[in-house]
Length: 177
Image (cartoon, rainbow, N blue to C red; front, side, top):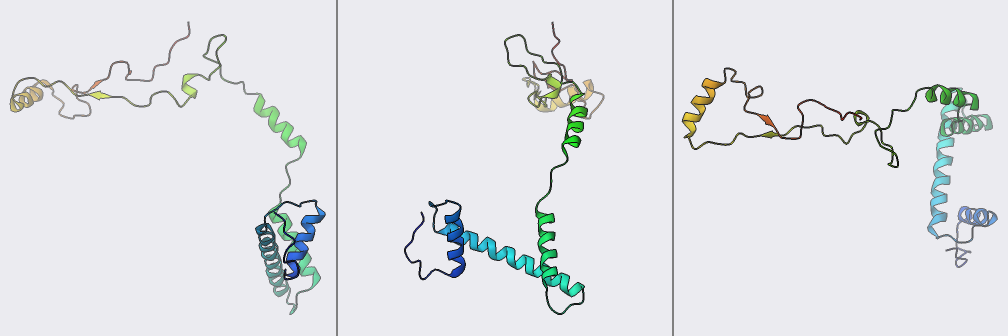
């Protein structure tokens, strides 16, 4: 909240910020807002004057003059603020983008339309491997039987790994009927 108490011991710059807020009809603010504006103000002035000094040194001058300050401010404005593209460019971009039709919907009537399954990120992207049930045979005999039955000892291509029911081995999308 704005507080008029202690106005005499307030620095000159803080009084200026307070008067600026008052001139813009801002009456309700916290006291720290003045300090935040002062910090922003000081940082901006230091940046501009530092840039002006660099421009002055580059020009071979011993003192900073108003042209250096103007150039520094213009550089800040050009660097900090960018103009949007012209309206014609945006319209042409919109026309070219809108030429591509949207994907067909997979939902029925009265249902919120969703994009096709291949365009969504909600379909399962994994497969579950269910371990083979163990028989009552001893482990050594089972290993010998598996080696004899499977000519390919590579476990990643082995027939021992089965997919969980309901999960296809390849991506299959539902057909529309």
